[in-house]
Length: 454
Ligand code: FES
Ligand SMILES: [Fe+2]
Image 1: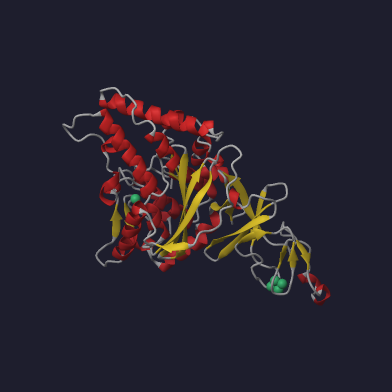
Image 2: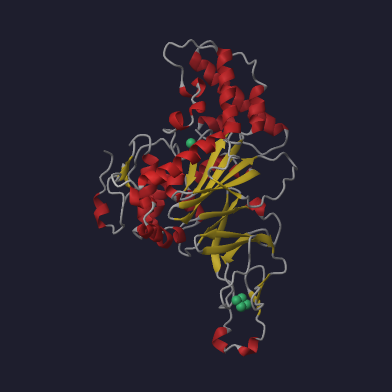
């Protein structure tokens, strides 16, 4: 066993993870636990509020909702991004809904109080009917919310004393900067309502242990090694690798971008060494270089994929604690965001992100229609995951089931993630939490349980 946390006894978190590879089931449905998360986790963490291409022009705004909080994120005139709480200072009506432009500011629909695009109060009808203490300067402005940008996204934090965004996103941020994540733009955006706890939803996507059973079509020799005694055949190898890329493109609906699959198709006749290991390495270099070159020829901002593959920045999952993911695959990426809608209900969004050609104008992305988890429009791989998790959520309630039994070697990330949550629920100070974030925001996912320092 990796760690028995001596300090854990001091925490007052109910259903805390006391044995690191055993996760108590109540964390996934108990109303009291959910309430603790709402009070001590969500108000203290950085959350991806929108993609910057949703608000391309000055005065564009979007509303970001988390639990019972609504935040307005605004592109300012000098192209910075700012945010404030979405609540009229008179009687609390939301001043903004959805998305739009606030060049004229915001006018509350109830009694007409007016706010500038920066949230400053600029008008109170029948002002003299209010007593002086309800008209104090500054007190009538929309309440600011911490907002920073990174990686092509605007992020908010409801905690004024939280450390800067970047401190909370490392080493995720530095890895993905090298990969030029900020140059990606939305190709498409889907949303799914899952009848499961938000953590169960996340944890279905953070290990490869489930792949052979849940996604047998991805178990392809090029990725999982030759069967014993199997003779290596370079032509068959290229064939099956392209089959894998296609499954990741169509099956995942864009996890590998269709452009990159087309580049791979063009490499079919490539001569490879007879030795299996040498052939696989040669193929990977050839494919990485061809993808890089194809995108550079259209003027896209792309790093040298082969260099980055050597650093592990390809075909990997990155989590930005608690609920945002980037999955770089060759030139492009998927991104996930998970938000709780109730103890056993989650909104999961999936983006396909890619690199625009030089000068390419893309349409402004708008929030997608939310599909149910069993909607027939989901492609095969999400369908497989979305079938498992609701079954898990039901099964967790079984009287005889007490806790999840994690593989210490393959599912350590789940434990590291859950124990970091416990740190928040215990009210630990940010200085103690940031090092734990650095353990969770790291790759690869198939990694062991680590000591988080609390
Ligand atoms: S609640 Fe906004 S003007 Fe009255
Ligand atoms: Fe999966």
